[in-house]
Amino acid sequence: MVGPRANWKGYIKFGEVTCPVALYTAASSSERIAFNTLNRKTGNRVKREFIDSETGDPVEREYQVKGYEVENGQYVVLEADEVAAAIPESDKTLAIDAFIPCSQIDTTYFDKPYYLAPDKMGRDAFLLLRDGMRKQGVAAIARTVLFRRMRTVLIRAHGKGLIASTLNFDYEVRSSEKAFDDMPDMKIEGEMLELAEHIIGTKKGSFDASTFHDRYEAAVAELVKAKIEGRALPKRQAPDASNPSDLLQALRESAGIGAKETKPKRTAANVNRGAARQKAAKPAAKAKQAQAPARRAG
Image (cartoon, rainbow, N blue to C red; front, side, top):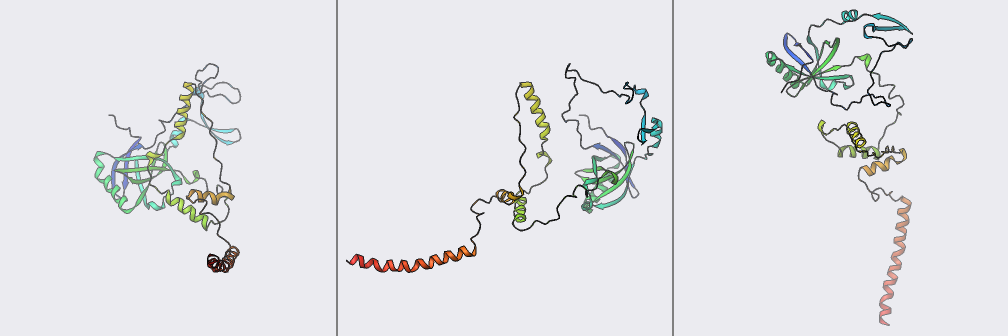
């Protein structure tokens, strides 16, 4: 069986310790369902062409060149050798800058994961780094040139090896302030919060990626099968969002509280009226008991 092909080979360095390593793709989209674009009239595949936006004529590959737009419609032309010369020079070394607590890791910056494995000659140093980080509960921040760009990489202990995740730069990660700008400044408490905590407690579990299923892929596969067999798939209706006025009742139902448990408690006025009725009923009951023996004697 042919082993996986390394995406990158180099060295990892911490302090004065260096060991050869290789990066392997940890996640791939190659198994996803892919579509081809067809000509509806002929059923043939169509191909992509580069067209001049002004003349409408096709542009051959030899005349295609990269350009950077400096103003509207104004470009600086960059030749392939000029772009190649601007690429940072790589020394093939993952130089660790710092070790940070795993609790400080902001996953918003995660880009792509890669498995980091040692070369046969560097296993001892590799294992020393892996076990040291695991015992200290830290991850390593390193920098190197990967795929023609200077990248920041987060390295963590993972199973028998390490996992290296490339990180997005700060300018690539959008601020959350605008996304949450319309969030109301309010605090949920009381029965609603208690019910929510109860529901969360009953749903606690553990992370198991094997239980995650790509429903889109399954749905598309079923659609293709239905098309081949001449069947029509039923249309699915989107679920209705909970009405804010019904939220408490929805929480109660989710927590398994039935209608009996949700009946409102009697008010103080109702309790007093009930007690008055009980007091009025007692003399009447005693009178009936006194009359009963007299009727039997006659």
